[in-house]
Image (cartoon, rainbow, N blue to C red; front, side, top):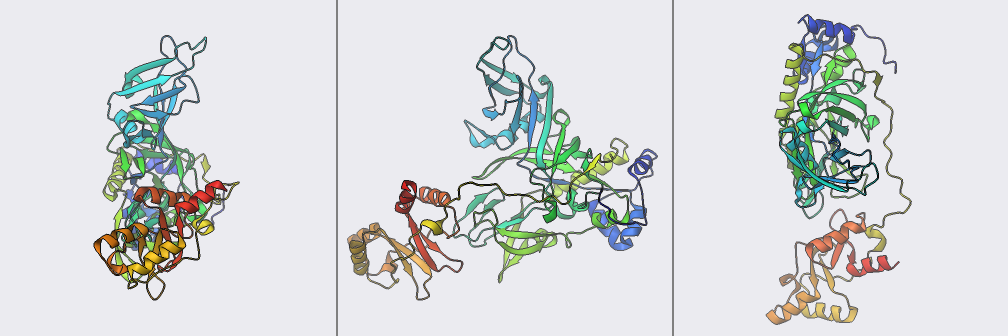
Length: 504
């Protein structure tokens, strides 16, 4: 265990549990602790407060549930299984399956997925289970269809590989088009900012050194008692992006705190209610548990750049995010949360009530979570081509005031179909295609500004090529001008360039 230095106040978890049993424990929510620490300081707060309760309620895509259906007669060894047409993983045993929150329905697509299946089970609804198998001597059955509720299952265990990020990065979009992400819908040209997490209520923000949070910590999970059983996947404490793996009895959970969701044009997820009690064992934990929204910082990232290391637009506090607007450049940009602060407060208060009613006691971690682990990116053997690698850099352009006849001559001589229109500073202001010229001749237009498309779909040099291919397909076009940060024309990429890449 890391030596974090001497402290004036020292309380054990056992001592705090004894105070809970006697009805003498002082239990406050994380928001209340902020004011107590500001008024009395960390030592005074540590002497007064025994437990701080936290809460968060947001989309936690890395969620799912283990289900055991029991053996049929004759038995079946499920090779593939679908629950309400959402496929679950079966590569473990005969009648066990893991349903992931983000798996999509094969009939309803993004309207319904694994998160919705989990919510339906928690609500006591009957679900349809369909399975196929290859058949063996001891498991002769090759297919089965049944309808079950959670009460028909032997086990239904919520088992989430990655929950409760210490902090979430906020998101915005520099592109000239709306994009759809796990951070929600992001409007063009920094039109909005979205964020997740509850700031000063978020569990891992309250004990970032993991002095009281670790393997075996009892928590509020989905409206029932659950546990932390390991560090979460992508646990990255060195950048304040710690995560936890959680487990709990799905049969005892409440759909108020487990909600299936669809994130538009991204996919399905599961909103999970989670709260961790923080035992105030010393003034150091009291200080971190008392950190307010104005002290907790995160970065606004540009999700318009589709790469692993997205550019940081600016650092921001949760106080700014919760205010509903942040400053980007010379203007105020609207901010909206993807998680529910109201429900997070509710979870912190429910957890406080459980402790005061002596139905929830604290646990000492059997092992602390690592504090020095560094998250590694995927090891890729083959480099992904980017726009800069295949775009045409020497681009023929025209001005808005040029004649349509001159553009027609360019198309005839050069043999291409896209003519970017730029202003005197070289910034893209429009585009004309050979089809536009044909239409212009029929309508007797004279100048390019009369026919050019001014709201141009563009690409950036550091975009991966597969994203460009999706743009071309989505908009039914065959070429994209490539622009720099200030809108200056850098090149053009067309379906012909993509074809050359595939041939290589």
